[in-house]
Length: 245
Image 1 (cartoon, one colour):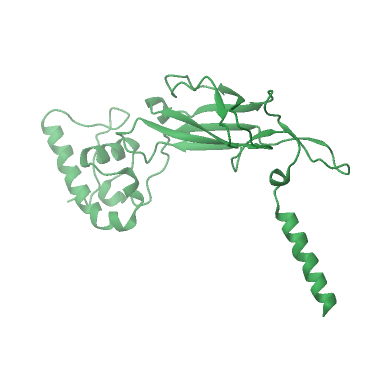
Image 2 (image 1 turned 90 degrees about the vertical axis):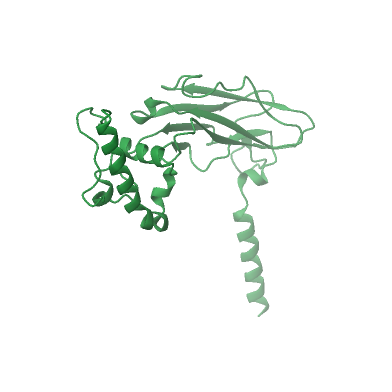
């Protein structure tokens, strides 16, 4: 019985030790790393209502080591691939710091909604670099392990767009017709429907018929007024589905 209890005790101690993060048990120099689950963050404006032309993506950074009573500058390099500052995203701060008494930093990147996002992705690369406050490696502090190890969370890529390659889950083609991004946007704008509602089965179950009927009349009225609405190709007239009554 005693032997069994000892084995159980050692097993629990080992489990507790193995669950500790390397970063949490770290006791060497001050280190900085990207506190994200992956090295790539993606954002889409697809289900963001048209009235919003900006969205913020937060990038989380973590400092490991001592806590200080003064601000510490973080050396981060931004490399926009095909995104232009002031056009595709708002100007970034000249300097980012881990505030006194803190070990985390959140960098807000404000993305700007442009027509270009409907046909191409915008990409911003980020990389943490060494400086006098932070290193990009950490010391295990043990003689039986490799002393200096490069962290693997130094880079982050933000990719944003407004691609819509498939219809929303609750789009009924018999009532709403063939799905196109332009028609989807028009319906939401004209009827004041939040885009994400097209993912809500309970909402769309009683709303679809009304949407089809309303938009069929709207398109007909626009055509009568000499403002026929066409699809993106400028040739195909926009229509609703055969069951739109």
